[in-house]
Length: 80
Image (cartoon, rainbow, N blue to C red; front, side, top):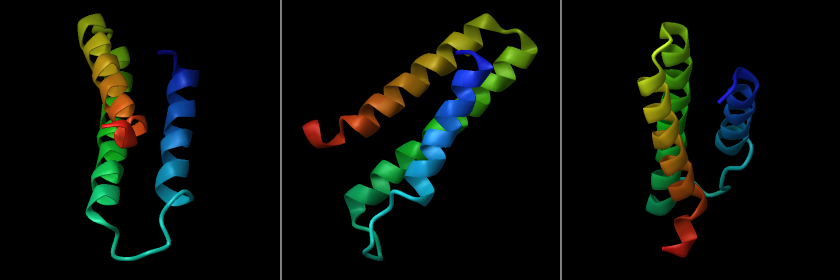
């Protein structure tokens, strides 16, 4: 991922966490689990940036794959 792509993904996750949230509180358990996935995705994006700074290609690829897995689980939540 390039820096611009990572920034766009951070913006997308920020939107999901801050704007696109349910009106009911406390959140239902399935909503909480989905929002936890977004937090995991943020961690992986940060780790991608750190791996880029260290120029560790293996770690960067690993974190990108983990990010893709987390986001596919997030977007495919209702298909399970």
